[in-house]
Image (tube, rainbow, N blue to C red; front, side, top):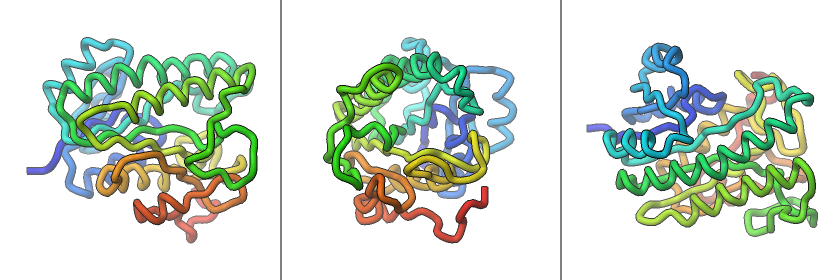
Length: 245
């Protein structure tokens, strides 16, 4: 019998890229969406759809306990697809709520369900200023101000909730700036770019191999080091992909 995996955020950019990888690896995938009209699309991808809002703690708890997954993957965000600058200040607040309250609810439900593994999406551009490349032991930028402070506080809350989870192997993946299908850009951008398929593959490898902990996941560059992920997860960005979406 294949292991059950609960994918929170199955209709997001990373979730859509990750689903076929999980299915090919032999997992029974249960994927969430807040919208019932997206359930059919998930079924067509080979996913058991779960219509639930991460802010509805009771419904989320009941869904996880009913499914009793072996592993849970957190790929939830609340950002405009095109990352419209005019909407990003509000989006930072909404996304921070997903990372704080949403993650807290998801971790509690994961523990109640008895899952053995938890993998969660974070970001690789929340480090405090200092020498580069940033490694996972460097502090987050908790002295930031404005919208960046909102985002960093959300990241810190997410990571603490995940790493404090008991009874399971918990892993945080600090992703670089995503590009590729279903993201805001088809080509690399930002100081630590990451193709969405490479982000998805990192989640699969973390689910299968991670001993727990925090890992940077980004293409080679001067901003962050992903050497830990290469060494411990066997992850590497697809050098042959280049800027092709």
